[in-house]
Length: 213
Image 1 (cartoon, helix red, strand yellow):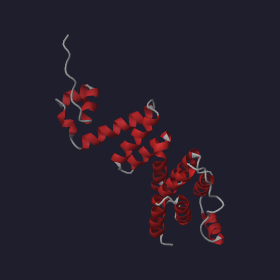
Image 2 (cartoon, one colour; image 1 turned 90 degrees about the vertical axis):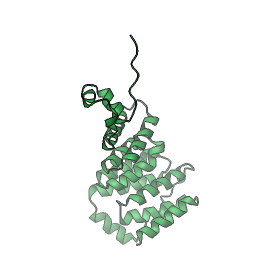
Image 3 (cartoon, rainbow, N blue to C red; image 1 turned 30 degrees about the horizontal axis):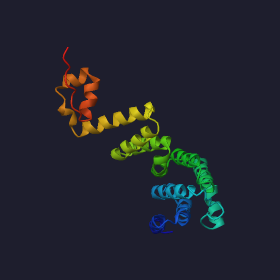
Image 4 (cartoon, helix red, strand yellow; image 1 turned 135 degrees about the horizontal axis):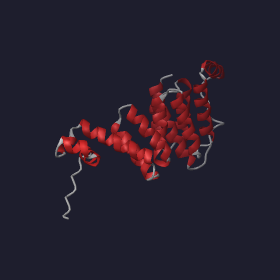
């Protein structure tokens, strides 16, 4: 199977509004390569599009010859088998984002970090917890800008999510330090004794003007 060709066709189909065909192609790819990140992202996007019309595809999808699918199932580890089952559940009910979240979670636990990021990332704009998980995975893979955007979406969904708030703040500070924006602080001593000054400097923010007594 030419995976790239399948995924190019799936992406084109999704752009043309043929989400069902896009999902079918991605499902075929994931049967052969369950950790394929692009396939996971495109499948999640296609199913979300179908979910808007509550259109299930379970009866139509199921790639590959039955014998091959059975052979792959016997060779699969438990975590991989769970990821496949969760994917099937999401395909059956694409309107249920919690099923999509469960699939992405199973992908991560199976060791498919790239595919998990693809699935969580596709869900991010409509699922705050998925956005937060995508942020963590993106940060771990060195995709800092993407991680910051995912954390922004998580906080947009739940402004009181202290875990996402802290992760985004720390990541922003780390990014700023790498680009040497901390040098805008008045002195290293100020950074050491004033954590707020450190964070402001790390984010490239100006120091507040002193208020008269």
